[in-house]
Image (cartoon, rainbow, N blue to C red):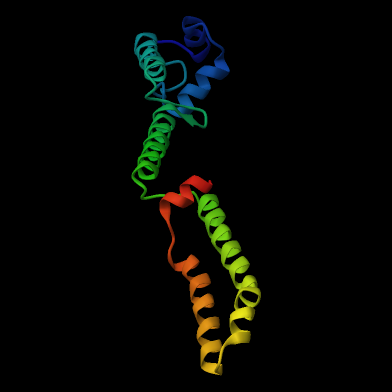
Length: 157
């Protein structure tokens, strides 16, 4: 049977480290001066092996937990990449850019309606004809929003 200081000398560490290992349960706590050096050495070696294998928690870092977190992040990234390739997932910046382009085209067409319709409206015989001309031009402009063309959009970006 040995004391903590003799155990520390045998394990080639400090008495504080041995006390820390006892408090953490790495080495089984015994009565004062009653430590079995062989048992304590085996417990210490098993603990060091667990650390080396990445199965033991060292401080705040749990290597297995960190590896699992990394693997999950990598799997999530690959899943997102595949979803983008399939067209199931899009980047919001691209959607916003396409929507902005569509709205710009519609705005341009709507602003051009008076210039385009004025000569035809001037020679129209009735108010109904003028109304028809204006409605046709507005519908054409609004069809820019409804008639989203995927191929044209990919060429523009």
